[in-house]
Image (cartoon, rainbow, N blue to C red; front, side, top):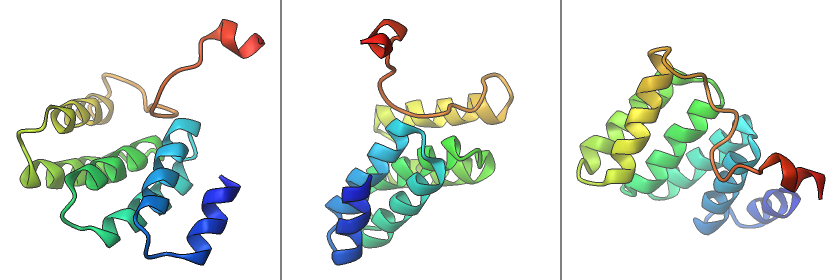
Length: 117
């Protein structure tokens, strides 16, 4: 994350930096930073539904369920045909309805035996 932080300080207009940083933060479970970078990416490209979806996921791992739900609803207004957006909507809905706990991160899980290596 140090690389992303430093790169973002140098050039805040390059969309790839906050987008990739937000994805790494989602993977690592860094909720506050994920929200920060995902919001920065959205501000650079307000028409990109994928960036808005990442912002919703960042809000979710930061335990801001109602804000995540509002964000994903905006995504579906932009593009209600994308199956990934629909899956994210379902994930957020299940969490805020109490059917599932808040995820601590979004991304590939490390199996216990891989942690030992």
